[in-house]
Amino acid sequence: MDHFNYVDGLLHAEDVPLTRIAAEVGTPVYVYSTATLTRHFKLFQEALAWTDHLVCFAVKSNSNLAVLKLLGSLGAGMDIVSAGEYARAKAAGVPGERIVFSGVGKTAAEMRMVLEGGIRQFNVESEPELELLSQVASSLGVVAPIAVRVNPDVDAKTHEKIATGKSENKFGIPIAKARDVYARAASLPGIEVVGIDMHIGSQLTDLEPYRQAYAKMADLTRALRADGHDIRRLDMGGGLGIPYRRDNNAPPLPIEYGQVIRDAVGDLGCEIEIEPGRNISGNAGILLSSVIYLKEGEGRDFLIVDAAMNDLIRPAMYAAHHDIIPVVESVPGASVAPFDVVGPVCETGDTFEKAVQLPALAAGDLVAMRSAGAYGAVMASEYNSRPLVPEVLVSGDQFAVIRPRPTLEEMLGRDTIPEWL
Ligand code: LLP
Image (cartoon, rainbow, N blue to C red; front, side, top):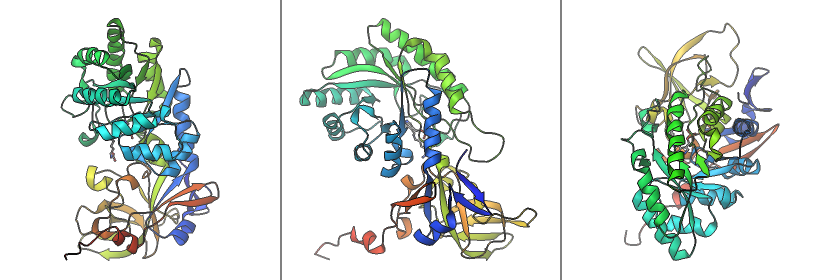
């Protein structure tokens, strides 16, 4: 459920008509709903209410400071993967003891930064990382709390580019090696073992891969405890999918996912961490865009809109589907026709979707691409020298620009021309 609905024939974000945002901010623009973000976060809190837990929002899915501030003030922790994301989480007021640091390529400088600023836990992804972390923490005279990310070799049954839990993926340590790596960790100065971490992929629409992975995690917890390690936290990762289409094939709900966790590891007495990103932010955002031209082609008609692949790369990158709907509701029985919805970028891949059934639209009309709150603005670029797309946050009947559209001068002003040219 989200808060983008038609009211009196006009698509609204909560109580704000999208026409108002387009008029005041221009298009293309991302629009997020406070009520949807809040609701989705709380669903995870409720799903884990049976135990001590921390819901760590995956900052990579939507890293706008206002979004992080909102979730942080609701009690969210943050799952970060870079110094930049750490700085964002801190700037949004999230304390270090609620931030977990994931990622396969943490540098010494990043380790130093978060150890000095405060961190709940490193999710260590390799043996060389463990050795480096030990050195960095020791040199600072501190102890780094760690979980080892274990790769359970489970097929997450999702798009191959976002599956992470198979042995051929670059993530984590093979589960067969885990006991040796934990033994090494326990022997190293500056390292304290606190738990185990897993993350098997993104946009999972089936709970079975989780069941398989978490069963392995439960076995590993028992084995590591028998080896003398104090395993007191389990980080179950993120990845629960969202409905990108409004049909009857909705993925499982957070409450069902919470039950899978409880069934698998509920008897172990561990604090549970999860790292959902898309499920909190995905359907809390839309990309609002205007039609520039309607172009008749041979055998197909194109709707050329002012958003492009640089603003929302998911269709080009993963062949992802985003519902595209008109902001002015089409009246029942009105005729619709198929359009290829494309952006202005000079690539054939700059196609949001082919043969979308839409009513007759004209230049200047608005369309919304749904489910764009996760991996939308964060993956945007300036390709074709198109300034980064702005972002707006709605709450009730008010909205605020939470990232303005850069001017062309600002965009150009970042480049420098050497004096010898
Ligand atoms: N934790 C870790 C360690 C991750 O790598 C990820 C996502 C998450 C949590 C959050 O997963 P989520 O709950 O959002 O599925 N750009 C792609 C998705 C990449 C996901 C990468 N890792 C897309 O647009 O589909």
